[in-house]
Image 1 (cartoon, one colour):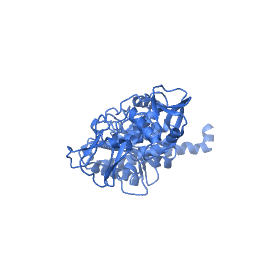
Image 2 (image 1 turned 120 degrees about the vertical axis):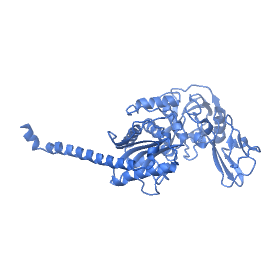
Image 3 (image 1 turned 60 degrees about the vertical axis):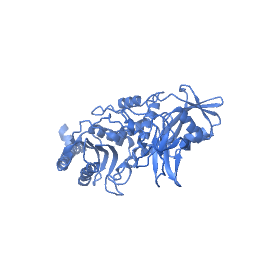
Image 4 (image 1 turned 45 degrees about the horizontal axis):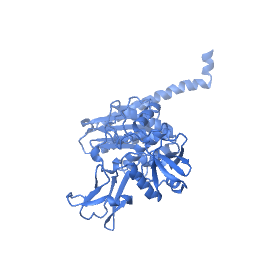
Amino acid sequence: MFKKELRGSKYFFILVFLPLVFIYGCAANQRMASQVKKTFRESKIMGNYQVGFALADTNAEKLIYQEEADKYFIPASNMKLLTFYAALKMLPDSIPSIRYVIRGDSLIFWGNGDPSFLQSRLQAGNTYHFLQSATQKLFFAEGRYRGSFYGQGWAWDDYNDYYQAEINELPLMDNLVKVKVVNGELAVSPQLFASCFYKDSTITDTTFKITRSFNSNVFTYPNRPAPSGFTQEIPYKTGTAISLSLLSDTLHRPVQLIHMPLDSNAKTVYNMKKADVLRELMLPSDNFIAEQLLLVCANQFQQQLNTADAIRYISTRYLSDLPDKPHWVDGSGLSRMNLITPRDMIKVLSNIYKEVGSREELFSLLPAGGKSGTLKNAYPKTNHPFVFGKTGSFSNNYNQSGYIVTKKGKVLLFSFMNNQFIQPTVEVRKEMARIVTFIHEKF
């Protein structure tokens, strides 16, 4: 009697129809897997180095296709996707910039590690205007950051390169000195560093380059005119004294040092919109922003600003469902000590997709293949990109993880990792584009 009544109801249609949809979906995925596998087997170069690949639907419950997806790879800047996700989960709509208390005629403040404070491209002004207009005397309380000025496993001989700015609790102006030629002369910003530049007649390099002393803010360059159009960004040596000098010079008022632990009742000044900071993190792949954002995350759950503590907290609280436990040591991926599997990246991408909610909003924060950011030159130029995601590159390593929008409008997650190759990177990138484009066009 029950079976007869059920067959005569709408529930019979649902019970029969759903398995058919499931079977059809499985068959479609199997066909997709077979064809993607064929494109990999047709590759003339991918058998020569370590390749990992994973492809999945947005729910990431099961991989559609995989190549060594459970093996560990050096992710390089793909690691920024974990930092990106942590910021989505932990930070409010605007970046918590500083904490402060007012004691009589004094305003005492602590740094949160905010990378947007006086950052050159973001032009965020909330914190600056708050401090500049305060009627009280300004005192900076140091000591929240507990860590090295470099991330674990960073290459120390890259200290002079723009992409390896130091980490600290009160970053100012990207922690970089910017130099360019104006009317035939070197123009230095921040101007405070101009007196730290010296000509050196012993430098005989054919390429004009400015080099900072490793342990101090002494910058030397060849004793000859800089070429027209010359520009360079060099990390400055951070420290409390230089931070206070820079801040005082910028605010046009003195900022003094005080030794005082963070007050539990301290209020917060919020600076840049989180979405704008995350876009600036992802499109140019900004290492400085990535590292500092982990300190801002640490500010959300403890008094100390510490990268390792932030990673531990994020891994336990928000990434415990990853299929493999990554070895995660910094926010930017600068360290070759970072290791993660492609199927881990798929899970992170799925979590991000669910967290943002709007596909258009998410894709606006990411490099777009052939159009913007670090994916601009990885695919043919277009106003209608179909790949959105993150690149990651070292010498002999190149990776992409993100989202493919197929011609049928389906969104697929992918993580494509290439390690230990000796071919030119452009050849590896071109082969990746061939396979990703095939997936876009075929499905």
